[in-house]
Image (cartoon, rainbow, N blue to C red):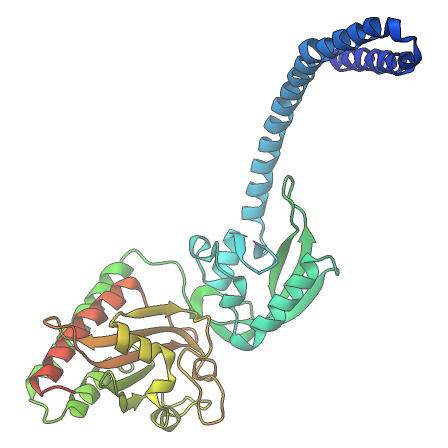
Length: 378
């Protein structure tokens, strides 16, 4: 503190001397060299004495402040993570920066997965536009907002989202803090959706995949199919229910033809007939798989039109409440020819497709493609 005051006094004296030098510009021409020498001396004083002094004071102040800031930031991070209310920190585009422990349990979304992804993607499709709009309004300073939304994993449970703006220290842009609370007496818990993985969960899922692979192989080899459509239907029936809520099979590649659609019997918003009437060429996911020959795994699909629209011109993914999907080309290993495309949907609170399940589906797709290849070219 004493050094700062001393530096201030020295700087004030320098300012006064500069003012005197400015006044000396009116001296006779013969005396100007003396004034110039004095000005150069003062500049040397600034460069050699005052500036290094200022840098030392700044470095000392910054070091003390940064240490205190780091301690405060660590404290605030700890408080944020342990808040009993579900809280997320987002930017104006709803991209998640932080998700605390309570929000992880509330939404069923891991913090590591959520970070860097739009929070609006975890909501039901009808709520996303409103949530993005309200977040942008809060971020630009229009005041706090609150709205009712629905998580895509539990669309039947209304959730109250309260948005407020805050400015993190050292950052140029305003962030948005969202607090989530159940809008009714039923607090969404992890019981009906993704929750903590039990100790033997991985082994159980692996065993289930092995059973599925065995069932698919048995179905393909037990009785020779006479037509390609029969092969696809047989494979779809193995996958339907136990592995996916919806199974859609399209034959061919350049000219796609829908052969099989199997969906949940209790589905009211979308019927199997609606998907059977679709033109596969109007489904971007299917067309891309048929052309590129690569599997698509999507969790909470961002594009509602990725699987086209039904007869009422509504996006199929929205109407069916699709929370994850697999779109798998049936490709021969020998020449890479695409024999057809299988699209699988999971809806509502069901766990999303995992990478292990996608890998198992890729293996089954090769077996199906080999069976189709034995019946001739599409």
